[in-house]
Length: 412
Ligand SMILES: C[S@@+](CC[C@H](N)C(=O)[O-])C[C@H]1O[C@@H](n2cnc3c(N)ncnc32)[C@H](O)[C@@H]1O
Image 1 (spheres, rainbow, N blue to C red):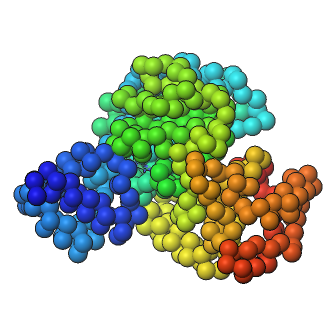
Image 2: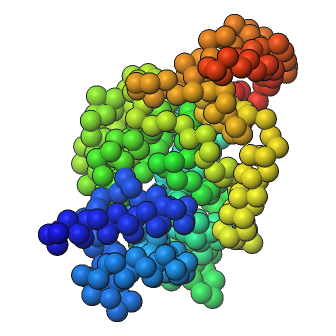
Image 3: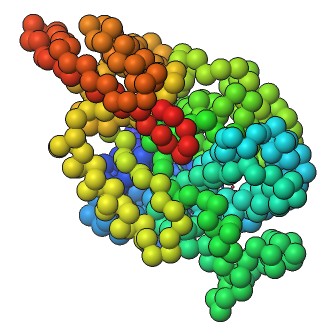
């Protein structure tokens, strides 16, 4: 077998070992970057680059090395106000425009995807703090910051950084928004409390919704074309009409360019145009997605205990909870849990989040009427006596329960 074919095959083995033994799936990441990072890791362990077979055997046996490799592949390099000119554009035009165009009835919702150890999220929170302070506005702000790396999210929640950050931050901001401690600088409480940090995989977990600004910087560059398209269409879905997408310096909105109009090409800032139609979505909702409950900043909550709590909660829900789906006013599924596969099915063709496109026709009338009554009366509606055929002549009786839900101040 030629050497290049052999190397490619064993990189697939590395990806497979990580996929089946950790929560990380690198299938949609660029193989060239993965290959270089794996070889670097092999070098650190004393393996020549040609001996990937032996390294695969090592990660199969050694969970510590598996975790270290996965961390290495995630590449969480970041800094405060990374790309100064971009943050100036945010401070001087994008954020003031967002604030001025908003009423105080609804919060401004921001999602920083791939936030690493928090520097980008805190930089953006500081800018909003400055703009809102200057405008005397009563507008509320909700900032969600997520990353698939649990340790990075735990660091972000701590908000404690080494003294070297002083070279990235304007001295006036450093004095106003950070507290000097023995081992560095801690982000001040009023900025930390602005952000909810959470563990979330952009490619596998349900996205946030009705977002005004998505910032996803320096993550897409590590994804292959499919992964990038999936992430971009997901951000289009997450953003409200007219919302803003901010990408990293060497990233673009790619083929979704028609759905995003550039505000500043050099700063990679785009405006969401048009509506998300079901056929636009390059992603399907993952029924078995992990339940990553958003957590308020809390120094004591370690990533490890959160992960155990998530695993436990997920298992209990799988075993005991009825199948459920969270839908928005457009009847789009935002989240599903339990054994939902027995009731909902993704139709062939472009994936669609439309609840009715996924539900058996026999349930449509009952379901539609229950949802309408629930939305109008804001009470729980129970519709019994539904029946679905499993395709082999066996009829199952189904009850539908529809509940109004308030989430982050919005009705679902
Ligand atoms: C190079 S850092 C960028 C950090 C920050 N956005 C910035 O620009 O400074 C890339 C981050 O993306 C995260 N990441 C990679 N794949 C991800 C995924 N599928 N879902 C969420 N985060 C991911 C990594 O863990 C890492 O923290």
